[in-house]
Length: 442
Image (cartoon, rainbow, N blue to C red; front, side, top):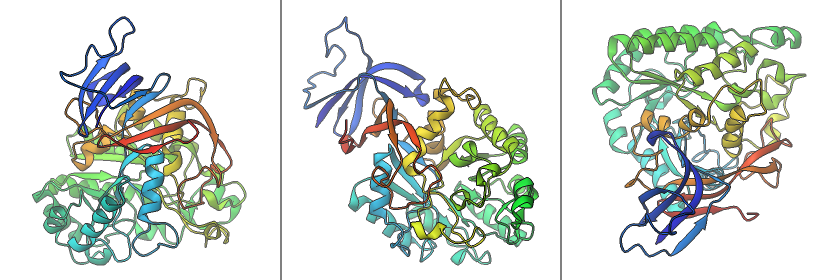
């Protein structure tokens, strides 16, 4: 099918495009991008012999490359009562997300090629967002024996990770990095010191003292960052710190980047918007791991995105049912169902009337959701140049909607933003030239 998307405000950081453009699509690929002009014939820049089957008017809307979420748990296999690949990839495309990275802590663990193939094939058969699995760094995530990373990579894994489980043995971690570096396979790290973290559930500070909850000090993360940076320097491994929560961690990673170490960093959107004070009186919707930290940490993370030391923003999507958050704080489930709100919440950081949080440009925000994640996992995506796959979304920045049981597409119901008004909504998502989502209210 040949289609043209006219008069949309295209923001493509990879190619330095930020303006009104027409996009021509054929056979699932972008064949031309041209500046829209009322003074020229409608198809002045159309490729030769380009007959239009579908003409989409995107006037008044943004056109972004399809978003890439570097951390999204889909709950399948093993916890289909919470969510499924079908439910969450459908929710993803309704939010403009065309590719998702799935951590290896499914049940069973993604530590064999068969598991990696199963997840990808299931997502491909469903036909919504594409799922890129991370392979387990160690067998069964137990931190003892290394997996066959070469075979996991051949099976489509875009990186390896031990998820939220710590590899306590430093020698095992060093050997894992050496193995991964042989294949230039990125290691996804969630740094923490198991002994310092203990049974903590909130940041060590004012809120933990007031509520009397077990605390996690900042050092639980920064000690892990320091160890892993030392091992990266000696092994040459390419590493991505995927869920940074402390300002001090940003400083350490930025310094390592200045020294030329092959490290990148990512942050969950809720860590850019919330801090420990949002927990209030034991609000379990704000229970995440790593925990929400101080306002200074939140500001430091945002500054890290603006400076480029943090390259990617993810949802850290962890869907649960309503009951999972009803237990006392220490026993309540961890995580937020975040894919529905990833784009509008990220763009709220660049809204002109948000004077406190307004530290990102539109280009920086979209780069953190598109081309930067694509580079981290080494895929050809996140951009809209001629010849690229036509993966994109249309976004109406003026549309207001409320996150509730009716509008939330994820099967999860655990979000601190439930009941709150969002500004901006995806109206259409296209993958390989095919419309996979269209807002029925548009």
